[in-house]
Amino acid sequence: MRRPQGHSADVELATLLDALAPVLIPLDITPSRLAQIARASFVKASASQAQMKSSGRPHLARIAAVTGLTRSEVKRLVASDYKIESPNSENSPRALRVLNAWRNSSTYLRKGKPRPLKILGQPPSFDSLCKAHSGDIPYKVILDDLERRQRVVVSRKHNRVAIAKSRARGENASREHSALTFAVAFLREALQHNLVLVRRRERIASSSNLSDSYVETAIASRLTDLLDQLPELFVKRGTRKRNIVNVFTLVSRSKRKS
Image 1 (cartoon, helix red, strand yellow):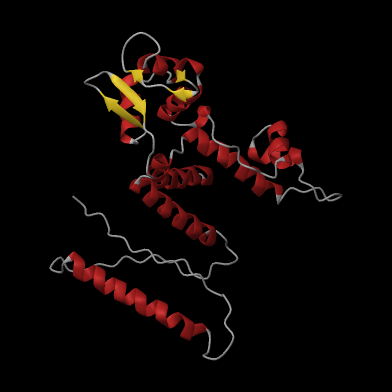
Image 2 (cartoon, helix red, strand yellow; image 1 turned 90 degrees about the vertical axis):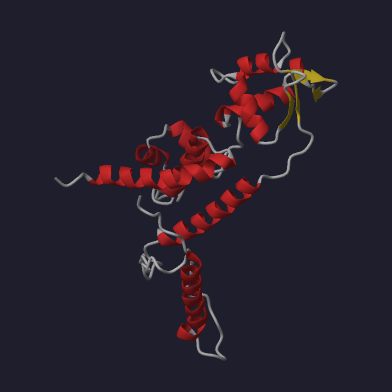
């Protein structure tokens, strides 16, 4: 039996989010924050298709009908020119909520600065901070997460924890951000039906006798030759050049079946 189109779209979107989630988590994007960003994008896209003939302004009721949002929320987003709200504690990871409260709650400050805290003990302690601001997440989980993020300095021997003075941007976060930037540029092009010339995915098989390094070098060489030939294919030498083709190159190793 053929599946309904809506169900098929749900499956494809879930697959896309399966690929995005491992990239977004290191960038501190929670499901709540993703939904907040998505609302602005959906209203912006709908506004271009739902304008009043008399004034050309977005038709708020039509946008609300298409997106499922309330008219008041649509009105707010349109009035802000679809601006994405700044992250807040409600849509941040739990560990960062605790850190934010530590920096802003007078109970945990000394002379206006976050004070070092006992991990366990009478308030103010890290345990009491977590009980007030981490919901149902145990203090140890929050402490381990902040330590992993290099946001705190912990001395378990002395039962003390303090906010780290500085933190270099993590290599993982930088790598994930670069991957997301590439994916965004690719999807923006791939989903514009009127601009796409070719949609094609090729799977290259090789003998198991060849080493991975040999195969990678061979593929890279083929791609380099293709890119070098593109200007020759579309523009004659000596003529004025114009941008007519965007080329994305992605070479990945297929997962081996166990």
